[in-house]
Length: 343
Ligand code: NAP
Ligand code: F7E
Image: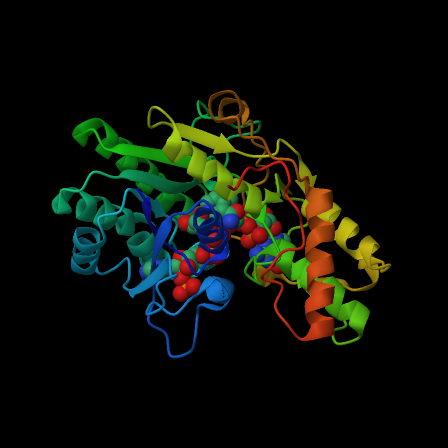
C-alpha cells in the first residue's frame, strides 16, 4: 500500500527536503500552499509533475493555518497516514514585530490542524515541528528533560504547540510526536536567517556585487546542522513504535562570529573588512546559547547528524557562489548523504 503524507510548510526549507525524501521512499505527498500573487513554490519546482500525469505523486492544495475549516476539509478528503506539521511564521526577530500574527499561525495554527485531524476521524501519525527556541534562557546542553524558558513570541508560540501536541497524545491517544530541532540550515535556507545571510553575502562580496554586510549580535552560540539530515529524523519519529519527543542536534557549539569566519575564509575574504554592526538586528531578548544533546534520538531512532557547522558553511557558500555564477537557485544540493537510506 502506498503511504500518504500531508505536509504543511511544504514550500519552506524543511518541507522541500521532506517532500524529496518521502517521494524517494515511494510516498504519495500532499502539501499545503498559500495563495500568493507570485509563485511561492520555487523550492519544490524540481519535484513537481503535472497532476494529470499518472506518474504524479505530489499534490498541492491552497490553504492557510489561519483557516480551520479548510484544514478539516483537507484532512477529510486526503486522509493521510502521516501529517508533518512544518508551517509557521518561523523568524524569531520578526515575531517581535508581529507577535499576535505569530501566536495565531505558529501557536493556534497547530490546534486548528490537530482539531482537523480529530474531527475528520482519521487514523494518522502527527509530527510537530517544535524548536530549541523553547529552551531560550536555559543554559546548554539542552535535552528532552531540560526546562523550557522561551525568550520570544516565536518561542512562546512554539511552546504552546509543543504542549498541545503532547496533550492530544495523552487525551485522545493520537500518535503525535514533537521533534525539538536545533538550528538547521542549507542552501535553501531563507535569506534573512543569519547563516544564509552570511554565505550569500560572502559569495556576493567575492563577486563584487555587494560591499558590506550588516549584522547584529555576533556572540550568540548556536548548534547548526544540515537540514537534509534533519528531515530524515522527522520521518524516523513517525516510524517509531511509540509517539514521543526527541531533540535533533549536532552537539556542536559555534558562535555567529565563528560561522562568519569559516564562510569568508572559504572564499578568501577577511570578514572584518566587510561586516558592520546594525542594532536593528538585535532582539529585545536574545537567546545566548543553544547546544543540543541528541543522544535519545541516536539510541531510539538510530539518528545522528554527520555534517557540522564548518562543513555546512562551506556547502552553503559553494551553493551561493554557484547560484550567482549560473544565475540559478541552489535548490538541488550537491551533497551526497550516502549514510542515509532513502530507498
Ligand atoms: P521556513 O523555511 O520559514 O518555512 C515555513 C513554511 O511555513 C513555508 O512553507 C511557509 O509558506 C509556511 N507558512 C507560513 N505561514 C503560513 C500560514 N499562515 N499558513 C500556511 N503555511 C504557512 O521554515 P523551516 O526552516 O523550513 O522550518 C520548518 C518548521 O520547523 C517551522 O515550523 C519552524 O518554525 C520549525 N523549526 C525550524 C528550525 C530551523 O532551524 N530551520 C528549527 C526548529 C524548528 P510560504 O513559502 O508561503 O512562506
Ligand atoms: O539567528 C544572530 C541572532 O535568525 C541566529 C529559526 O529557524 O532557529 C532559527 O532561529 C542568531 C541569533 O536564527 C543577525 O541574534 C546576528 O542569535 O538565524 P537566526 P534563530 O533566531 O536561532 C530556531 C531553532 C528556530 O526554531 C527558528 O525558526 O544570529 N544574528 N546578526 C542575526 N540573526 C539574523 N537573522 N540576522 C542578523 O543580521
